[in-house]
Image 1 (cartoon, rainbow, N blue to C red):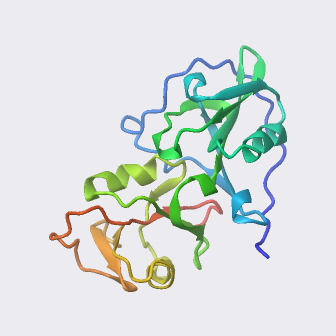
Image 2 (image 1 turned 60 degrees about the vertical axis):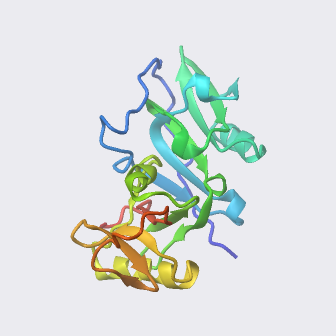
Length: 229
């Protein structure tokens, strides 16, 4: 049985009226520095990622309704296969839940104090999404992408970056995913010196294979448990 992680249930009452600019990953670096909470449920379909102070813009929502209850907003998205993510925020002192069917990596977000952004991880297409042996969260997204698109793709998910082994423990966790889960498939990652390289068959190559021009899988990394990464 999968472990059920307990998440914080007491959230600050939303008190800020929002008419805010969209989050620009290019101007504000990326989402990597945004703290996230990863909730591993009884089934993969129950897994969630939550990020604070981000919300779905009204025009990106296919349905919204008034509520100030986190559980109500979360459950509304859970109950709809169309929903990929939801957010709870306040507009003119009224709290709303917004549901989005847009792929998470294509969704522009608003920086919104005290908002809660909730992602259904099963709706992020992936080969693998789970906690590695080092305690970090790893995502091998679908579809494979060209090298030029890999970096931005990871960063568009709150709290995620292209996987980078800063310790031997992290390196071994990444190599295990490459070997045992991805069956030796070539994957783009960083090495310990921040060079973009390939990982294959449980090994990190010395440099990116310059002959590889086609889209390839890649590995993203996140730190929901606030470890040293």
